Image (cartoon, rainbow, N blue to C red; front, side, top):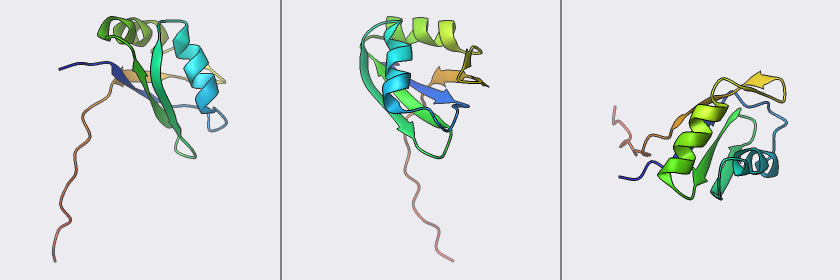
Length: 85
C-alpha cells in the first residue's frame, strides 16, 4: 500500500490550493493538492512515499500562515451506509 497522500490539518482558512502546493513542493513533486475550503484542512499527495514521509516529518508541527500544521498519512476514505431508523 502506498502512503503518498497526506492529511494537512489546522490550516488557516485563508490558505488556498496553490499556497499549500508550493509549500509541499519544497519536499518533492506534488502530484495533487486540495484544500477543503472553510474547513481548515486539506490533502496533499506526493510523487513518492519517501517524499511524503520527508514532507510530513519536516512540516508537522511547524507554523504556516499563523497556524501550527498537523500533518499525518491520510487514512483511506470509507463510505458508511446510512442507518435506517
